[in-house]
Image (cartoon, rainbow, N blue to C red; front, side, top):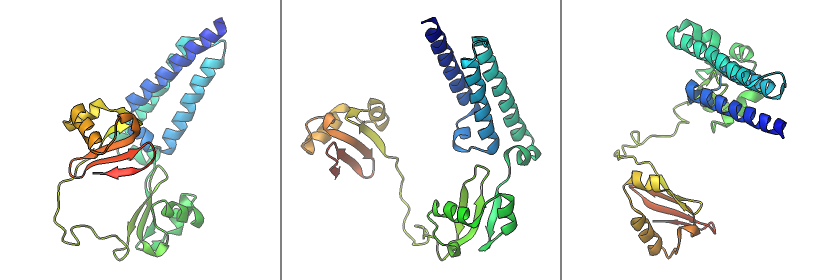
Length: 232
């Protein structure tokens, strides 16, 4: 029993330490995983794992390992922000693999990307033909950014002379049968208003609603538990 309790405590401390370190290092590290970030995550996980399952390692060692490794990562992040010349070495540089509609084979070799992999990356950006691409850039996180040729790019409202209008974010008011009071307050709405919207659609209870979204310019959209969508 003592071993189970000890392991539980160490796991909890390790989990909290990693969570705190992730918050301190910033959210962008989760969305933009560079090779350095990937290696850092592996090593940090290995440090905590070894500390937890090694009987000779104490709780203080777990905290020290996480804190020291986090300090090193923070130092690298500081250097890349402070000194631009270090960014290429530590974070890598974007590579233009298609320039003016022509594939740059040298850049593809440099990034260890073959033609099939490039086509796969392009398809993930809804590009199914090389002829559509004016520029394609492999970013430091391995994703591809595409600039299409003008004849293949979708027209904007400005191109079509469509008058601009205000843009509003949709707000989820009911999710899986549960009312989100925080979102209701953020939208400046009340439960009474929400109940009225349900009654107008012959919905007896929020429990019958799988998803309800409100948008200022479009009103209410409802998806019931029986998967029948209803709009305002």
